Length: 175
Image (cartoon, rainbow, N blue to C red; front, side, top):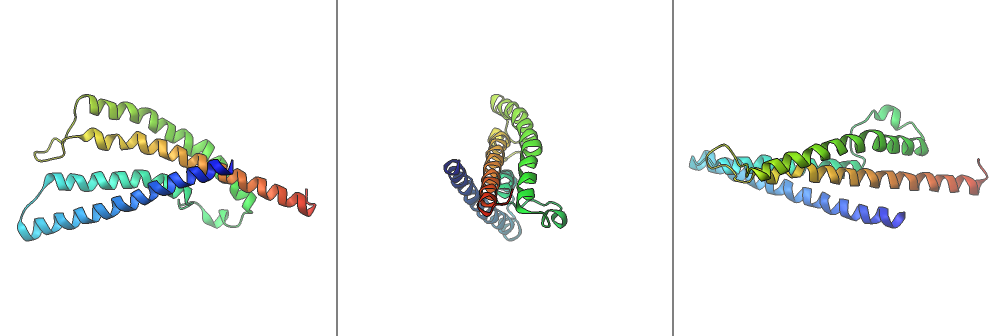
């Protein structure tokens, strides 16, 4: 189980690094767009659309990475006061009963949504916009699959934590 968790962690960390690159690309894009617009009076619809494409991809894949890093907002006033074992159970339950089912629904409907955009060759309605809207729509099911992968990593890591605390209690003679 530890090997699987480490493998998933490496994949998730790689995608997290890709999100950081997307953020840098988005900042460069915004900088270029502002300079072009205000200094040269040159507006590019394609570059403006690229901003939200990069932001959407970074945000959607960042959801899973943040889950792995335990960075999502929760009621920390209560959670932080709980034992590590209770926190592990909450993380497992949250992943099993909330994260995975909701994300599986988004994945299910997202596949059809992005396929439909690809099938009809959907592009931007604006002149000068980006031609392949299906690319950004494909981020929805891909990132949903990634979030499910991240939730599985969280579950495995929390089970490892429970097993470790259980074996530690047995060594100490605590039941």
